[in-house]
Amino acid sequence: MNVNRLTSKKTMATGVAIALAFTLGVNFAPSQAASKNLVYGSAAGIPQLNPIILTSATEMPLTTLLWAGLTSRNENGGLDPDLATRWNANASATQWTFTLKQGAKFSDGSPLDSKAVKAAFDYTLKTPVSQWKIEIDMIDTIRTTTNTITFILKTPNAVFSEAVADIRIIKASEVDSFNKNPSTSGPYKVAKFTPNVSLNLVPNPNYFGTKAGLSGIDFTKLGDSTAAVNALRAGSIDFLDHLTFADAASVKSNSALQLLRAKTSSQTVVLHMDNQNAPGNNIKVRQAMAYAVNRQSLLDNAYFGQGTVSAYNTVVADASPWQCSAKAGLTKYSYDPAKAKKLFAEAGITKLTWWGVSGILPEFTTMAELIQADLKKAGVDLTIKNSEVGAWVAGFYPPGTKYPGLVVPNIFSLQPDPAYSMYYMKSGGNESNWNNSQYDTLFDKAITILKPAARKAAWCEGLKLENSQTPIVAMFNIFTVHAASSSVKGIWVAPNGMAHLEGASLGN
Image (cartoon, rainbow, N blue to C red; front, side):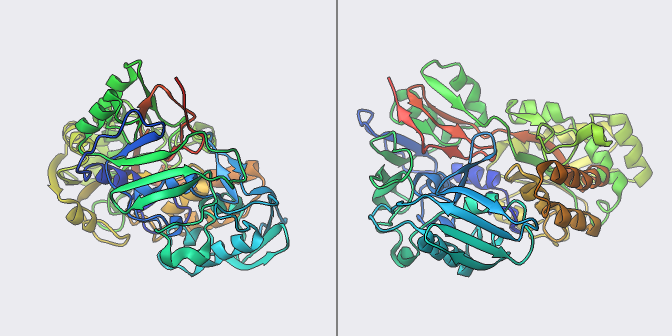
């Protein structure tokens, strides 16, 4: 599953993973509303605690509650110091040095120093199942001094300071018994953990940063979405992870509750067609699809308006500061059934098949019916076929799978920087099977450029190719929505939809 990675080839998106997880929760157990701890409700249990081998979307909030990184991402999508107080790179972006906060400790009182950081990175690089290994696999050598750690890279990387934000500093010597009582580096530590049942966190008294604002956090496994919302309204839980889109309006109108979502979104809802096999190998067909779908109508009806349209049809959002848009000559794929009909006719296309997933993700079902009507106006009959999730995934994944004639919905949940989102589109990495050596070369050049303005110009050249070649139909960016009691303060949501509770507190 794709969980916010810079260079992962596993591209099943986190948005999908989370949506699937939300359907699997069982055994709702009301929490004690009188508790001073924040009660965190989610649909599925937490299977394990090691953030380097992240196995489930439900584990994501723990990455910042329990663990520090050298750097950390902030609410605006930028980068802040964490265990590292400052960092710098050489002119070729092949050597990065991070200066560490002195005197930092793990929750057990042991040193959280450069040796501990090196051990965490060494463990990540040697762990084949790590979600994050590929973000740092360009590391050649790691050097340490008393308060610095230096990474010598095999290839230049201008965004390495962002990549290390995903490497959480664990005590590598504990990995064999990690779920028992791990020594943490973040604001909280584990008080009690039963895999897939319950988790209780308490403040880490040795944390080097701002102290925890809660007396504790109790993770509660909920049942279906109706039970979850009722629990929030009744005060049995204080925070609900991943609210259903249909419930967003009622929560927003309830003065006792609050709706939480990111300032900007990097979660993109797309349509795949096989670019290597007919009819998706015909650019006219792909462009026709981009004009045929009524993006705003789909967003309003399937996702209850929780998002923004992606008219430029790229993996970088229209509203992103990295988007070069119309100023660079990008085409806007506005809803135009007449133009779509002309392109489909020129390509000789009158029939296509929707390949969706059944039983879950009602948004996809709604989209299928609306797109069927859109394509009818463009002279194409769309047959809707839905299957259980395993068969659905196998129909188009991994990259390289042939699926001629199918239109496949998917969700990407990637970090907003093009170094993350555009990497997905490189040859061999995307389920649309778009392999473009020119795009690959442009990406490889851009990621070496340290100055942001110059790097943006280089990314823009790649976005021009995405826009003109339409390898995917990027329809809109959606906001993952969470909900909480109005008494909860300090929670924020990242562009990839992850809720951050490390600064949370409970007020009156």
